[in-house]
Amino acid sequence: MSSDPIAQLADFLAAGPVVALTGAGISTESGIPDFRSPGGLYERMDPMEYLSTAALERTPEKFWRGFAGLYGQAGDYAPNRGHRALARLEAAGRLRGVVTQNIDGLHQRAGSRQVVELHGHLRTVRCMRCPVRTPLAEAVAQVAEADRPWPRCPACEAMQRPDVVLFGDMLEAFEEARRLVAGAGRLLVVGSSLSVSPANGLVLEARETVIVNRDPTDFDRLARLCLRAGAGETLEALCGRLGLEG
Ligand code: NAD
Image (cartoon, rainbow, N blue to C red):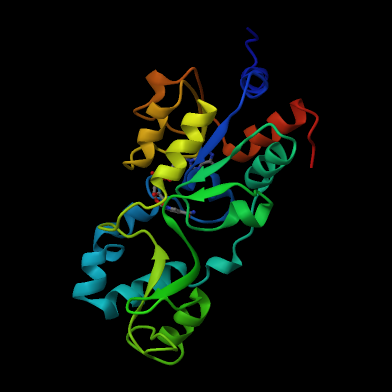
């Protein structure tokens, strides 16, 4: 086997179907902080306090102020070379799809088609009483500009909630992700500390795993190959190696 890690990564992709599992680390290059790197969100806040169903029910005003502050500008971020490389790999038939823990929607905006969003997304919010959904930006504007304690459903006036999976919610997309990973049997982890359950359990569904992450993870010993490197530069180099330049 080659000692060049990019060549090893290319061999991994060439050897059979692969699914990518991405985390906040693939989006740091787009300017979105992750949770656990130095300077990440965990240094500034306790996500359990701000991003849980308990917080939404107990103190909806505080929840919505915090959520709007954290994610109100989400539409300003753009996909980076890492997201684009995964989209190119999928379009070239080298990747079956992406399972992402991210809520930023940047894989789809980069062109990925088969994307399972394990933790939901920031495109819309939903009414807590009826089935109506509206864009997140409108909900944030209600909190910020109309000075409402929380956004209200345009149809029935009940409180709206984000379409992200909060601590305390069911993980409805997990079974779809599990099937995708088990079907491919091979997993490429990019930019995740693999410390969030049950997403990290997807590693156990794969026969072989490769991890591209700046810091070590608890699952490194199960991986066939670990690259301690930046997501964007690594995936771009991989595409270059496979003749899939952007
Ligand atoms: P995490 O913060 O626990 O871990 C991120 C990992 O990425 C770290 O181990 C870090 O070393 C690595 N990393 C950071 N920048 C990198 C880069 N450029 N290249 C390679 N590696 C890099 O993130 P997680 O494992 O995804 O779990 C955190 C949870 O937080 C997830 O459930 C996710 O839903 C949520 N989250 C999402 C976003 C987003 O949507 N962009 C941002 C923050 C947190």
